[in-house]
Image 1 (tube, rainbow, N blue to C red):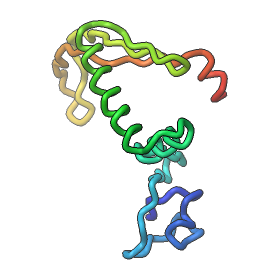
Image 2: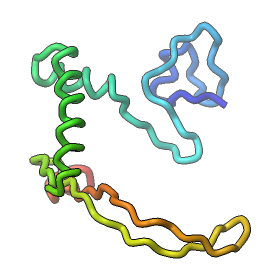
Image 3: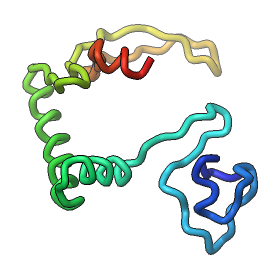
Image 4: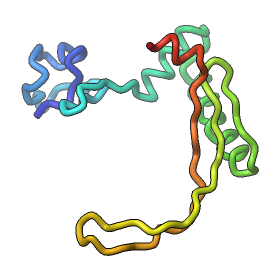
Length: 130
């Protein structure tokens, strides 16, 4: 089964998204999950789009994204929230230990406590997407 997005299948010489890609074909930047029928923007596509929008080089944008990830991780680890204007709010939340059922065996197992990252989208972005 072809892993290329239908909208990008032409990049690999095929208009049929279900056709197997040629072995010498250049892979498309966006993968396609035929079960979900969704396309995903890759990191390189995001970098290119931001570089085009801002007029900065792809190298500069890539460095900023790498720094963003490190700063967000450090901030969340310290217990503070991160608000990205126009996008949303990232926060760390503690999930308590609990018991759950193993779906394969039906046996009860203990799931340890852990800290998870939560994301709440802004109303403006949610309205823009809807």
